[in-house]
Length: 226
Image (tube, rainbow, N blue to C red; front, side, top):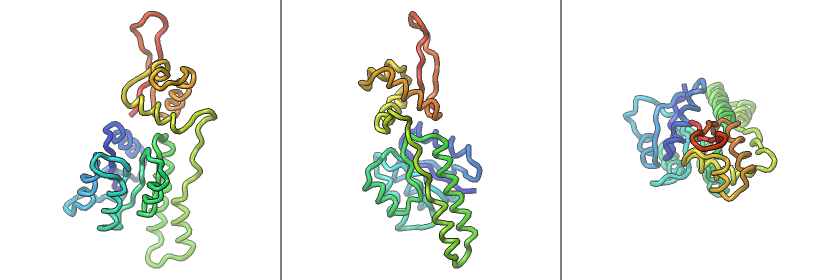
């Protein structure tokens, strides 16, 4: 069983990622942290009774960055792996995270399927490492490296952009909204807002509900799904 530490300063995201991990065989959440300092303390705590093998690490937190956590981790131990899970797309941050040993870099928002694929790739990597005890052959090394190669990132439906999807996602995180309310808040058409909301719903990141209490037809409301 791979012990997982989840690090994210957003309580809803922390809950979502915990539920995602709980749906996977071979992984167990052993700790959660909402800040960089707490994450470093948990990783360097020699009195822990549960082992941390993998960190799901956000890159932006109020008291430090994920890169800070990675630097501390690499300075003190090399036995813990890291998958960056963040909305940060800056190429320099991506480069530094990879240089510091992040096994994967997964950009929010993503579907459970995307998350599962990355975690299964990491699991295959661990299995390859365990098989190659002692001096590894070239074939075993190639298998280990290949296990962490990600498949191409799924493209969004035609006409949708990642940047606008982030804005719609942030709106729903703040509270439920209808397509009309999302359109008014984000300065877009109601049709476009509904496309993004439906995409999030189809991906399992949002859910629909009927809103009553106003004259006329009930209005569909979208809520961020845990």
